[in-house]
Structures are given as structure tokens and as C-alpha cells.
Length: 305
Image (tube, rainbow, N blue to C red; front, side):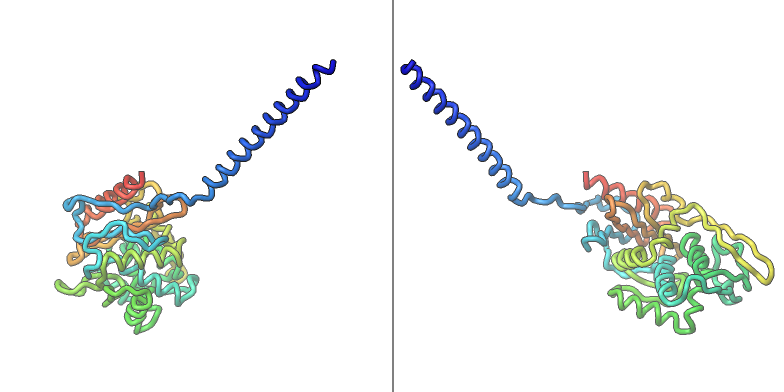
């Protein structure tokens, strides 16, 4: 019996040693994992910049801007001052909404309806009264010149100074306004000027400050209540951004077109969840602006894959 004790003791020693080694091994792996987790891993660059062929866009100027990081993802003559056409209405809406309550009633004057009209103006006439909110909806969604002229007039005679003052406060160094709609003043002078970069920053500001109005531009049509005397009616106008409303993740858009400007378009879209991006094209054609925006959005999303 006594001869068995050394064997038993040896067995115990070996067992304890195995347990200790197993514990040490587990501790090693635990510390190794903690060490690996502590080492900062390089973050993926998002969103990634993109490159396009020189002839990929019809537009003379373009930009893709990330308002979250402040980065420019694509640039083509983005700092060149060009006619804005109806992109001007983003600034008019920005200034008016910051100065006048949206439920204020505004009546269109003969002067308001005397400016050149488009499809968004065909059912409007002098004496029509709407809330400011509805006027802005028509001005942005259907690009109504009559509505936006009335909105600007509500600011008073110095509204042009208000637009240009706000442009300066926002740091839009290439932007200045001569009217509230962007309509050409004559064959040589546009109603407003700015750069693609400035438009992107303006759109980012408006989207941040008045998201509900900007997002309304993705609807296929705009319907508002209008009164004239004792008669109330509904006015409906089609969206000018209709050709791109099928783009997935589109947040908002504003069109512009005049003889001097050509085709302009700004669009905000989801680059990722809660990460909007803004694309701008200036100096394209009436139809080419929509194709150009599609090209930019498609290229941005492809660059992230």
C-alpha cells in the first residue's frame, strides 16, 4: 500500500500542473484579445471621392458635397460664377421663412403675376391669397415665379439686400442676387449668379433649417389652398424635378432653367443611413441636367462599394 502513495502523489501533481497550464493558456488568450481590441484599427474612408471622364457630364460646372464632413467628393469648375436661374428660389425661401411666420396670408399683386410664368403659375392670378407656407411649396416644388415673387415682396422693398446679406453671412462668396426668381433680366444679365459650390452649401443650409419644405420637392405634384374674395379653390401644379423623383434615397431637389443659365439642378440624396450628400450641376441643358445628376449619384454610390 505504501508503494501506491508516490504514484498517487505524482498523479495529483500532474493533474494540478495541467489545470494551472490550462488556466495560464486561457489567461494568455484573454490578454491577447484585449490587446488586439485596444489597437486602433484604421477607419474606412467614407464617403470616398470619385472621378469621372471629362465628357461624363454635359454640365459646365458640377460638385458633389458632403455636408456632414464638409468634404468635396467631386468638382468640375465648382468655384466658377454662373447664372443660377430658379435655384435662386432656395435663397428666397431661406430668407422669407426666417423672417415671416409660415401661416402669414400673402396676396399676389399684379406685379407678382406680371413676371414670366411657367406651368406652376398657370392657375394663379392677381388677388389670390395663400399662406406663406403654401407659397413656398409652389415656389420650390412647382418653381412658381408668381408665388416666389409675392413671397419676396412680403419682405419689403429692400428684399434684394436681404438676399445678398444672407449670402454673405453664409459665406457664399461667388453668389449675388438681382431678383428673387432667377429669371433673366435681359439677354445679357441673369437674375442671380453663383457657383456650384455655393449652391451646394446653400442647399445644405436650407435642408438643415427647413427640411419639411425641401423634402416636399420629391412629391410628383403640389396642391395648395387658394382664396380670392369669398371663393376658395385648390391649385395643383406638377413638380419640376419629376424626371429624377424615381431615384432611390432622394431627399429633395430644385430645378432651374433660363436661356442664359441653361439647365441647372441641385439634389440631396442618401449616401448612407443618416448621411446625406448634395449634387449640383450648372450650365447643362434642359434635359441633360437630369441625366447629369443621375450620373453623379450613380458614380458616388458605386465609389462606396
